[in-house]
Each structure stands twice: as C-alpha cells, then as structure tokens.
Length: 118
Image 1: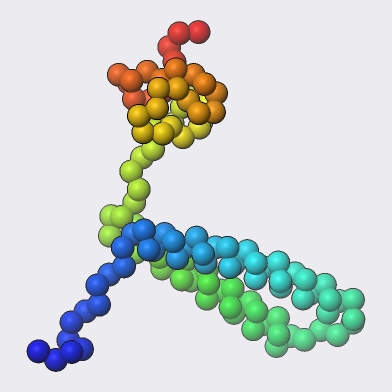
Image 2 (image 1 turned 30 degrees about the vertical axis):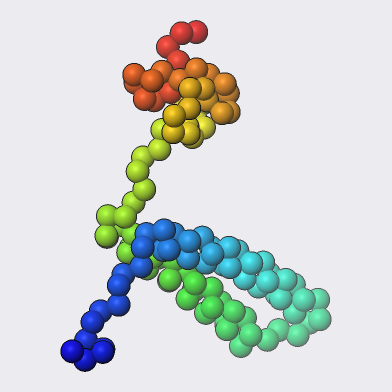
C-alpha cells in the first residue's frame, strides 16, 4: 500500500476549537498592531501602502481560516452540547445544587436552574 494514499485523520473538535481561539487572539493582536502602525505612519507623515496591504492580507487570511474552522465544526456536527443556564444567565456546572453566580437553589427536576419560589 503506497504511503500517500491514505487521507490524514480529520482533527478533533477540541483541536479545532483550540486553534480557533488562538487565531482569534492572534487576529486581535494584529488588529492592534495595524492601528499602531497606521498611527505611527500618520505621525511621521510617511504612509507605506504596501506594508498596510500586507498586514491587511494577513488579517484576511486569519479570518478565512477561522471561517473554515467554523464550517468544519458545524458541517461535521461537532457543535457543543447546550449548556444549562441559570435564570440569572450564568452557566451551571454539572451536578451543582446552587448557581455559582447568584446562589439560587437549582431545581433538579426541570434541569433549567430556575427557582419557582420567590
């Protein structure tokens, strides 16, 4: 069997989500850098269009990869389970008897965490 005939295994959902988070942080950092670069060019009255275009192209490539990861996760049915949410909007931990945010006792039968007593 030739070595290159097998498809590489598709990455796990957790790996994709980890890569997505890292890319979003990188995107945020690059956006800040682009703003600082633009400000410095303005201050020095020397605009370098090629440098701005290069940095923008890098940002577009990062956003394209994030979109690709979103499509992979969505298309493969790798979405996370719906989380339990308290009436106050805080996420509930598995097995919790009280909301970690507001301290409300959780209604275990309903599974929603809503407190029916006032």
